[in-house]
Amino acid sequence: QVQLVESGGGSVHTGGSLRLSCVTSGRTFSSYGMGWFRQTPGNEREFVAAITPWSGDTTYYAHYVQGRFTISSDNAKNTVYLQMSSLRPDDTAVYYCAAADRRDEVDVPSTYDFWGQGTQVTVSS
Image 1 (tube, rainbow, N blue to C red):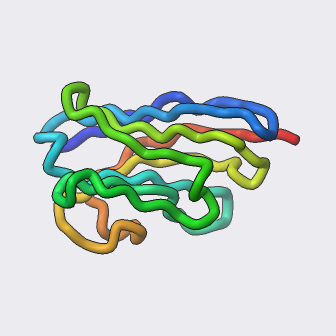
Image 2: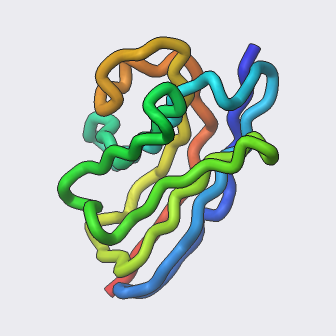
Image 3: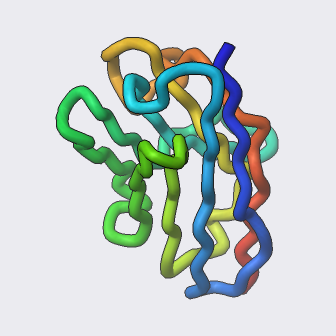
Protein backbone atom coordinates (compact mmCIF):
# COMPACT_ATOMS: atom_id res chain seq x y z
CA GLN A 1 0.00 0.00 0.00
CA VAL A 2 1.30 3.42 -0.94
CA GLN A 3 1.36 6.12 1.72
CA LEU A 4 1.77 9.82 1.06
CA VAL A 5 2.54 12.38 3.75
CA GLU A 6 2.43 16.10 3.00
CA SER A 7 4.14 18.82 4.96
CA GLY A 8 5.12 22.45 4.57
CA GLY A 9 1.77 24.17 4.76
CA GLY A 10 1.27 27.27 6.84
CA SER A 11 0.15 30.89 6.86
CA VAL A 12 1.74 33.63 4.78
CA HIS A 13 0.85 37.08 3.51
CA THR A 14 0.10 37.95 -0.08
CA GLY A 15 3.23 37.65 -2.18
CA GLY A 16 4.83 35.14 0.15
CA SER A 17 6.20 31.69 -0.63
CA LEU A 18 5.86 28.18 0.71
CA ARG A 19 7.28 24.83 -0.31
CA LEU A 20 5.14 21.77 0.16
CA SER A 21 6.69 18.33 0.37
CA CYS A 22 5.11 14.94 -0.15
CA VAL A 23 7.01 11.85 0.94
CA THR A 24 5.89 8.57 -0.61
CA SER A 25 6.44 5.11 0.80
CA GLY A 26 5.30 1.61 0.01
CA ARG A 27 6.09 1.26 -3.71
CA THR A 28 8.65 2.38 -6.24
CA PHE A 29 8.28 6.13 -6.23
CA SER A 30 9.61 6.77 -9.73
CA SER A 31 6.89 4.70 -11.40
CA TYR A 32 4.05 6.97 -10.31
CA GLY A 33 2.63 10.07 -11.81
CA MET A 34 2.41 12.58 -8.99
CA GLY A 35 -0.03 15.41 -8.66
CA TRP A 36 -1.01 18.24 -6.37
CA PHE A 37 -4.61 19.24 -5.91
CA ARG A 38 -6.32 21.70 -3.61
CA GLN A 39 -9.72 22.03 -2.06
CA THR A 40 -11.70 24.70 -0.24
CA PRO A 41 -14.81 24.09 1.86
CA GLY A 42 -17.86 23.36 -0.25
CA ASN A 43 -15.89 23.05 -3.46
CA GLU A 44 -14.55 20.18 -5.48
CA ARG A 45 -10.90 19.25 -5.43
CA GLU A 46 -9.09 21.13 -8.19
CA PHE A 47 -5.94 20.39 -10.07
CA VAL A 48 -2.80 22.37 -9.32
CA ALA A 49 0.20 20.61 -10.88
CA ALA A 50 1.50 17.20 -11.93
CA ILE A 51 4.71 15.51 -12.94
CA THR A 52 4.94 12.30 -14.99
CA PRO A 53 8.10 10.18 -14.89
CA TRP A 54 7.07 8.12 -17.93
CA SER A 55 7.46 11.19 -20.11
CA GLY A 56 10.79 12.37 -18.78
CA ASP A 57 9.31 14.21 -15.81
CA THR A 58 7.04 16.37 -17.89
CA THR A 59 5.27 18.93 -15.75
CA TYR A 60 1.72 20.22 -16.00
CA TYR A 61 0.13 23.24 -14.36
CA ALA A 62 -3.30 24.70 -13.93
CA HIS A 63 -3.52 28.08 -15.61
CA TYR A 64 -4.18 29.83 -12.31
CA VAL A 65 -0.81 28.75 -10.88
CA GLN A 66 1.26 28.75 -14.07
CA GLY A 67 4.37 30.85 -13.59
CA ARG A 68 3.98 30.99 -9.81
CA PHE A 69 4.16 27.34 -8.74
CA THR A 70 6.78 24.74 -9.60
CA ILE A 71 6.46 20.99 -9.16
CA SER A 72 9.56 18.84 -8.89
CA SER A 73 10.58 15.42 -7.64
CA ASP A 74 13.56 13.80 -5.97
CA ASN A 75 13.52 10.07 -6.64
CA ALA A 76 16.31 9.41 -4.15
CA LYS A 77 14.15 10.88 -1.39
CA ASN A 78 10.83 9.55 -2.71
CA THR A 79 9.58 13.09 -2.47
CA VAL A 80 7.66 15.47 -4.69
CA TYR A 81 7.68 19.20 -4.01
CA LEU A 82 5.44 22.09 -4.81
CA GLN A 83 7.23 25.42 -4.64
CA MET A 84 4.63 28.16 -4.38
CA SER A 85 5.55 31.79 -4.92
CA SER A 86 3.63 35.04 -5.30
CA LEU A 87 0.87 33.55 -3.22
CA ARG A 88 -2.55 35.17 -3.27
CA PRO A 89 -5.52 34.88 -0.91
CA ASP A 90 -7.35 32.74 -3.47
CA ASP A 91 -4.58 30.14 -3.15
CA THR A 92 -5.87 29.44 0.35
CA ALA A 93 -6.91 25.78 0.50
CA VAL A 94 -6.01 22.36 1.77
CA TYR A 95 -3.38 20.99 -0.59
CA TYR A 96 -3.27 17.29 -1.34
CA CYS A 97 -0.57 15.17 -2.87
CA ALA A 98 -1.65 12.22 -5.02
CA ALA A 99 -0.05 9.28 -6.83
CA ALA A 100 -1.31 7.69 -10.03
CA ASP A 101 -0.58 4.08 -10.89
CA ARG A 102 -1.67 4.49 -14.50
CA ARG A 103 -1.22 6.86 -17.40
CA ASP A 104 -4.31 8.99 -17.77
CA GLU A 105 -5.44 12.60 -17.62
CA VAL A 106 -3.22 14.20 -15.00
CA ASP A 107 -5.67 16.96 -14.10
CA VAL A 108 -8.50 14.66 -13.05
CA PRO A 109 -8.73 13.45 -9.43
CA SER A 110 -10.13 10.07 -10.49
CA THR A 111 -6.81 9.28 -12.22
CA TYR A 112 -5.07 9.09 -8.86
CA ASP A 113 -5.11 5.99 -6.70
CA PHE A 114 -3.48 7.25 -3.53
CA TRP A 115 -3.86 10.49 -1.58
CA GLY A 116 -2.19 12.18 1.32
CA GLN A 117 -4.03 13.66 4.26
CA GLY A 118 -3.61 17.25 3.08
CA THR A 119 -1.84 20.29 4.42
CA GLN A 120 -3.44 23.69 5.00
CA VAL A 121 -2.18 26.75 3.16
CA THR A 122 -3.57 30.11 4.23
CA VAL A 123 -2.71 33.34 2.44
CA SER A 124 -3.85 36.59 4.02
CA SER A 125 -3.96 40.01 2.45
